[in-house]
Length: 266
Image 1 (cartoon, rainbow, N blue to C red):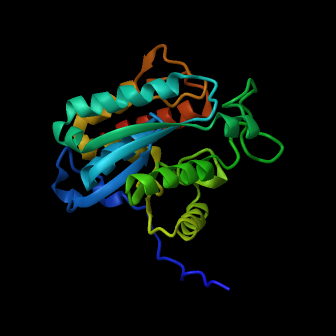
Image 2 (tube, rainbow, N blue to C red; image 1 turned 90 degrees about the vertical axis):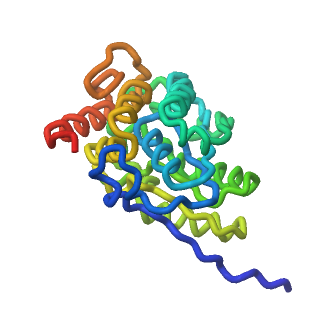
């Protein structure tokens, strides 16, 4: 009987606390990693900051988005707006920004129906999870992203998962992601790393990380161009960005902005 190879080593990186504090000064970001990264990129606040973070760390950065049957196309449109704005504002980053990929996962979205993919109220359910929870979404995203990274020769997966200021989704937790990374590396005979720079940050600290990475220019891109609202609203521009202001995603984003401003926008 053939023998399986020993389990490959795997690494998951969370902490971005050391990156917060400077204003547009990237000298403290550490040496450039001369390899490629694939950013799971939705066009929201968190993934926009993660894209900027990856562009300071890796010599080649590609992005991947997922069409899983979202009720609103605004999110998918925001992806291209944010990418273009970052490339225009930061020429050094633009030189490292590679291809964008959009993967069709609408079949998955139909199976894992939620308030994000069907006409349902945004509320807490009898399971104790919000109706916006798409079961297994991050796990499915990582499988698709890892398969793409394998074919593209990219060794790092970068995601905006966070277990500090979040909606309680179990597939955002670090223990879930550690288990998933081990499964991906075993199942693909790979040595991917999974970088989650926002894992231990509050939403206020995420705004601070944006400023540390790209100064006020990046903060303004995230504020005006990224999209977070579950209801897909892009009407009035609030201090913290566009959105309905009442869904859980908008409330988290707005509260983080208010806390960051109250701290003096460090």
